[in-house]
Length: 187
Ligand code: GLN
Image 1 (cartoon, rainbow, N blue to C red):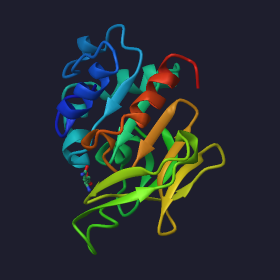
Image 2 (cartoon, rainbow, N blue to C red; image 1 turned 135 degrees about the horizontal axis):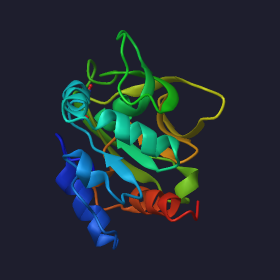
Image 3 (cartoon, protein in one colour; image 1 turned 30 degrees about the horizontal axis):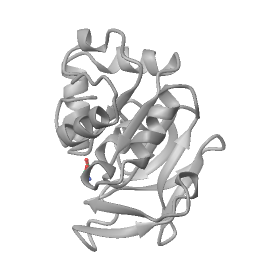
Image 4 (cartoon, helix red, strand yellow; image 1 turned 45 degrees about the horizontal axis):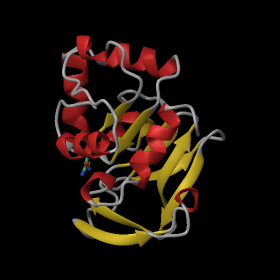
């Protein structure tokens, strides 16, 4: 669990409730033995800056390229994206997607809605959007898991998972279970 800035406590609680041994990653040594990484919502520019300052960027990128699953939510999704609209430099750049920051924010700061995520079953997923980004376009290896008003809001590319919304803020733990399934090599 990347714990530099943002909503990491809620994610960590959910992961622990699901039985996952959860470490708060603030320094490179906290990456030792890590089998999966969650990057929370917050402020992507700040998370990106701290990743560089604490020298976490390169080791995380290397571990991810060697197969470590990564799950980014909201700002975490922006940190994972290879391209950020209107910005020259991406952060981890692990997923072949172009994100648009604050895409819903100009219309509505935050809102909740029921999303259909077939990968998680028939029950709708209550999604909380807070100054949320969306995915503008995806590369050929990226699977869209959910859309909202024609915008892509959840994607998977191999072992990487990203959502525009905050699944740690509701009681529905299906996305965290899904991610732990990827970590366990079951999905
Ligand atoms: N729009 C924010 C950013 O650019 C993300 C907002 C959030 O994570 N709730 O980082």
